[in-house]
Image 1 (tube, one colour):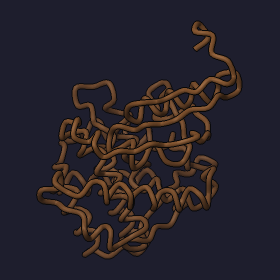
Image 2 (tube, one colour; image 1 turned 90 degrees about the horizontal axis):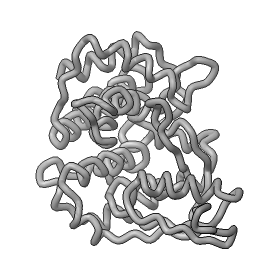
Image 3 (cartoon, helix red, strand yellow; image 1 turned 120 degrees about the vertical axis):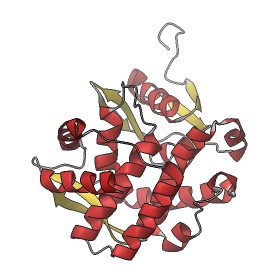
Length: 271
């Protein structure tokens, strides 16, 4: 941007997935203290999640979204036509955030999501619904001081898995890691926040049905638990979770211990 002589009236167009939107938006929002940008997300994950809410983060020293800013694009242009270009694993990665939106805000939405033939759903309708859910939350809490934290359900433990396996031969896509996180944190929700065993089973069945299960060596668990301490919701060295009271209703700032995280991961491993 500097070499090309971009001035403060420049307009940056970020065409691609979540990494493109995050990095392009981060560059635009910091270059000369900020220039305009437009996001055109091309993956399901970026369309239903990364492109909504103005969070622009980059990974640093192996930690997810460790450095970043809040800045809104002047427009976001979404077309489900791009989804036809995606490999199935990328579509499946984005589907995890769709599932999360139903779990935290809309039980009816969750109940209509497919386990079998999940890839043949009406994506245009799902995108519109997911964007409206996230947008309504973000508008009430733009800087994540309260309600917006519910969007992190599954992410405290999920991001730890994603970070730990980031540069390994067991590399996990974002949605694959968040699926593990949602199962683990649904277990904690049953233990700490009132989620029923039947609801825990519903969540586990859908996520295992779509994402399967990865093997987690016992030797990896302590390091994964340690990474949970880097989560951005944490406060005064307390590990904070967003947990489900029930399907469609989520609460935030629920403190968990490292022993409880190990118990949640053990639950996932036992399935």
